[in-house]
Image (cartoon, rainbow, N blue to C red):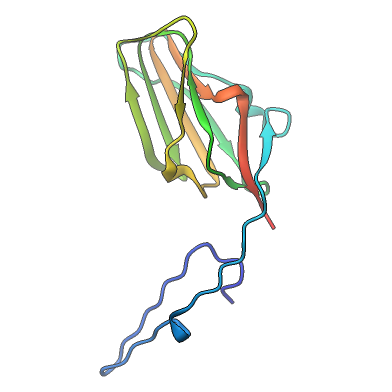
Length: 148
């Protein structure tokens, strides 16, 4: 019943009762190698979360679901566009993973590693903005671990 599970939780109890993993060993099958999806497969990956409202505002939004595709793999990046007083906020599976603010981002933009907390997530939401600012998935492509 646990084959393919990403998490395991053991609950035990009773009068001096409990449970444990047999022989204190858990067999983990290797994950398939990551593949890259782009805006061709998931259109929202081609968008930029941008707005030109106010310092530290993040009113632009991208939301991408990987359900049916897989989960976010390690090694992805966020790209900050040239911006003044930008903010970039990232949620993975609805949980805050990153909240970044800077005074400005120069002409070439800035690449920032995606938080480790996003690895294994099936959704990503990016809110971006500032006094004209924005952020997106770097190169509009995302490495994922495909569903098996």
